[in-house]
Length: 119
Image 1 (cartoon, rainbow, N blue to C red):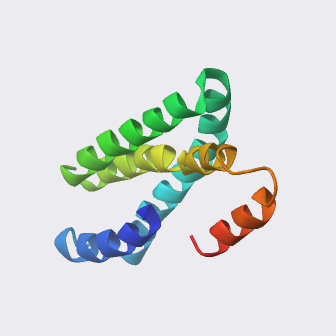
Image 2 (image 1 turned 90 degrees about the horizontal axis):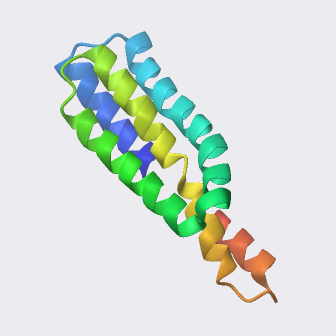
């Protein structure tokens, strides 16, 4: 959902803040950079403290920085908030892992491939 919303956000930011194409793309880079860092962070956090707590933390993290990004006063702040929102969104893999633990062992791999393809 984050990636889909980013396309709407970039269009709006371009017109409201009169962003150049480079500035516009840096917002996407900040978001995807955060997602990359988040996938590296939230897996070990969830392994240590549990998937439920890890997923709750990613949801709260993404919600807080998503809300803060809506009130960004300037371009540098939107970059910072979108990066941290990306870190929270990078924890979506925790939900996928948690979901897979509830599937029966028989057919788990096939179902997860199907789920990933039609997500």
